[in-house]
Amino acid sequence: MSYSSAHPWRATAGMRTRPALQTAAGVVGAVFLLLGILGFIPGVTTDYDTMQFAGHNSQAMLFGVFQVSILHNIVHLLFGIAGLSMMRSAIAARTFLIGGGLVYLALWIYGLIVGADSAANFVPLNSADDWLHLGLGAGMIALGFLLGTGRGEAPSR
Image (tube, rainbow, N blue to C red; front, side, top):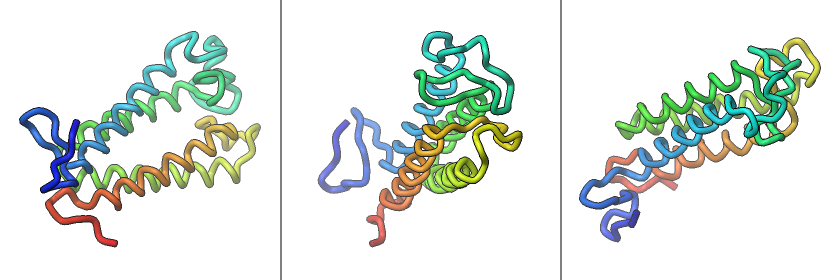
């Protein structure tokens, strides 16, 4: 993938071009989709046999670090599908990145407020999930704003 000097906000691959904003939404969506799939693979997810549909009692850990449940994996799959489908237009891609980023920031705050052993921890979330959600939220929002609208104008500063 290269960048055109005449249009630095447009990523090019071969003969086709796609605004970087839309490419970013697609990449983020593909990563979420991959993580959702990996969450259902024993070995990649440790203690897979303890996975529950929802709730803090699920002891399954993606990569041995991030607490997951069936619901958690489904959310990743849905975010992935949303990102891949919303990358088709600049407005939808920006909405996915900024809106999804806000959702992940809300999950970060929720995870900080709700105790790990609380019945309200239905996703489930552990400390590693909380800080990952902060990074995801901030990163997605930054991509949405910094890459502009993808309609030819440079991002506003």
